[in-house]
Amino acid sequence: MTSNRRAWPKAILFDLDDTLWPIAPVIVQAEEAMFQWLREHAPLVAQRFTIETLRQARLQLLAQRPEFQLDLGALRRAGLLAAFEQAGENVAKVELAMTEFFAARNSVVPYDDVLPGLLRLKGRVLLGSISNGNADLQVIGLSHHFQVSVAAHQLGCCKPDAAIFLEACRALGVEPQDAVYVGDDILLDVQGAQGAGLSAVWMNRNGSNVHLDHGVVPDAIVADFDGLLDWLKRAHG
Image (tube, rainbow, N blue to C red; front, side):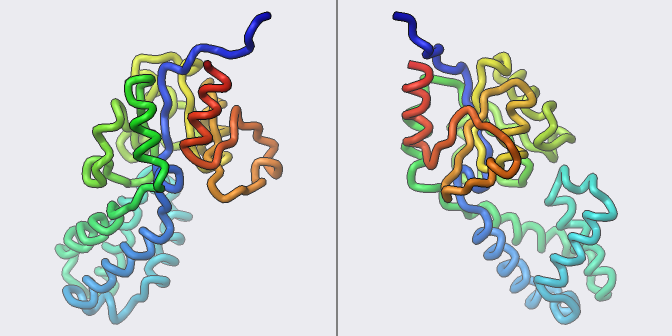
């Protein structure tokens, strides 16, 4: 009797935001922390803008300059620079404001299953990450778990472009067909990775059915690292 199971993948690559930790509350807290800094150190900006109007200005800037999608940190910096100029505030303070933002933006708390899951995978496969965001794994304290970390703002292309997945595979020294990508976004992560020749696991922590709307068929759907490891054992022995 033959088995349909395949050998374990040589590499597993992960998305970061909303796959390894929730990001929305972190961004809210980071924006609040930065705005409090503006009140104290750049009051002309804080008097003229709110968190929401700064956000709307960033969205308008992104619409005008879609290349900022590659680097959301650069988008935020450019938005702040424009706000400082409009308010007549000292633009030299923009970098200090960004430092305040990034410190809070990297104060993430991984989901409970993440660290145990990474430790269970360690030594069995190569581990890497691919992100369109600005998370700093070294600051967060997770960089030692990953052999390779590829970020859109460093590479100059972003998910779902096949190039970012292929670069991560190249850096790990594996072929795309020997790698699995795990992410929460059905289009950027799952469809993008499959288009680059990787297997793709949808980390669906909230029980969404959005994949049905887009006609995307993940290689597996899991709710956490336990589900991922179970699938690996079932599918790959």
